[in-house]
Length: 504
Image (cartoon, rainbow, N blue to C red; front, side, top):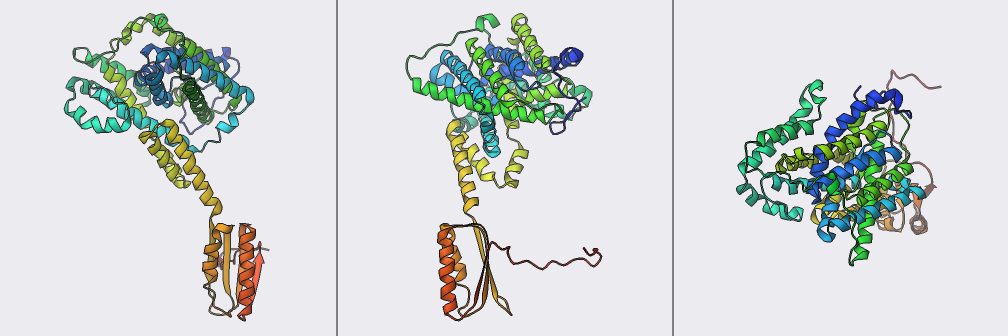
């Protein structure tokens, strides 16, 4: 039985794999077919050896699948870490990047032991969604150059600047092959359910590869050796240990947050027990330690593969583990097939995946909750600077937004035609609100009667002192002042329909 991402599945994950082995076996094959092209594409975008993506997929499936706290979550290389890994490979080289992956995994294990998963879940959603959107745009801007037959630049701004010349000098055959992938991926969700039972990314890669067979000018994947040859031990850096330590912490934090968010999304898709967050961090950390030691990319929980796992009918963690086994068998026995895949195919796949990280639903949610500035600042920060600076800017924007809401106050004066006027004081009234308070109180005519309703959530000493002082001065002009602290704002008249029954 299938389910949408927002609809819980009717089945729940089970602890015993044997009664559900048939369902798990089928689901594992579906996830395997989804994971292979995505893992290769993410490795390509990260500037890592292509087989490092498959190594991470194998380790993520088997190690995180066995040890993690979310039975139906599928782990592997993720688009959310692509920008970080690409920067690490450029700065430190691949061997040191593997060491950083090992260190990040050890930190995640410490996170799990210290039981701090709940703090990772407190990250503002607008910051997380903005970070993912910024990463997605960065990936798309870089990989579109590969689709055009060129080479991406180092930054999103440089990729945008170089785009007109890349379009002018595009290789027609390469663009045609990439276009096949884009068209298939965009139209696949509209096809009948029986057709969509086959993963769209797999079909797109296979069809585009067949289209490219008679086109010798199209560049293809180059794999130096097989999976065993790709296994490489981490390398110690000659210097720059402080920068390496910062990179370790960055990878650990981003991988932990992404894994926990993915696990929470998976929990909404089935009716079983929720994720054990601290155990999930332990499993993710162990997987990153093993992946780094084997020369693989960093591992996180991946919502695309996890959703495919649940929709395919997975019941236990056996599905996740088996999908890792199938990837290992493929990488050892059939790695030669990968060399027939054009680079433009993987790049086009990543363009679509990257743009799908910019979700209109996230933008609408941020706007509905008043967090759109946080989302925009985070996206802009990631694109114009780097991932860490962008996330820090998002946190700063969220803090300023919260501060603005905390200190917000509302002071109104209503002059009555007959009887006393009314001053309503609401919100958080601190010394910061005193100028506004005095400006409104100055509108009260001298010698008039007035009722002051103070229904503030918080009223500090400065604001109360100014209220008392103004009241004394106003009484000195001959007016009467009635102060009500903690009372509700003056009620507005409410008309009850004549047909409404009277309450007793």
